[in-house]
Image 1 (spheres, rainbow, N blue to C red):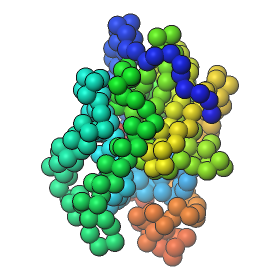
Image 2: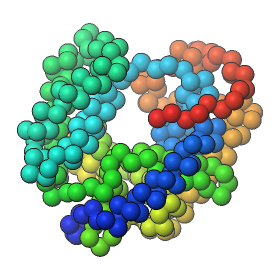
Image 3: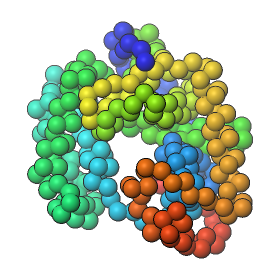
Image 4: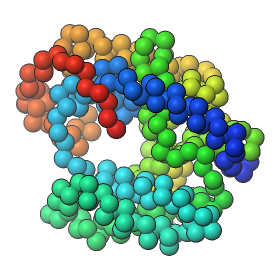
Length: 304
């Protein structure tokens, strides 16, 4: 973990032009993206956590109930993204709170079933929105958005490795310093991990850094995880050795996924995370039986 970038963060015309070229390249890759030839940090994490979970989500595409915590994260992310649409002087905690209700209503209009999340064992809507406000308020204790001008927000990055595997993901924020140094920022609405779990948390960020390096030829100066759950930051400065090791890890992971696909063997891995899994009833570790593997068909086009 390191100190924050000392240079002021600016978006320059040069970076904008570069971004436009990169976006065109990413769009070309995205056009051919399927779940059979691509890997995101989330799906990589699924396989590392439990190969059977990867199968249920990618091969079987089993439905999952919306998570009240995940939806809270989506809403807070959207508010922080919209906050930077405002003039710098208006990026205040008060304005962030005013953005919350419209963001929630917009999401609810698209997915009305989300209204069913509240009540019973979960908080009611009023309490839940207060939790969102608390997370947003904590953000302002960690950063001053009036001093930031992100170069990119919610940017889709993608690159194809020599093996043919496409890596892709969505980065919450990319900052560009006056020196040209890049900072990749990701917001987390949970709490920061313990010391023994930092490496797992940083894998996602190194994954993004690898994609940025391969597409733009620049190693990000800093990777920054902003934990709104307890108001802490995790910062890391990657180097070429880090990213080459990440690339080897991802390639090995993909080979393991390909072998599991060929053999039809998706072994469950029991852990404390099983308590949050929607598919316990189908898992052999919990006395269940997975459904038959679906017939091989045309790969499903990727959709965000």
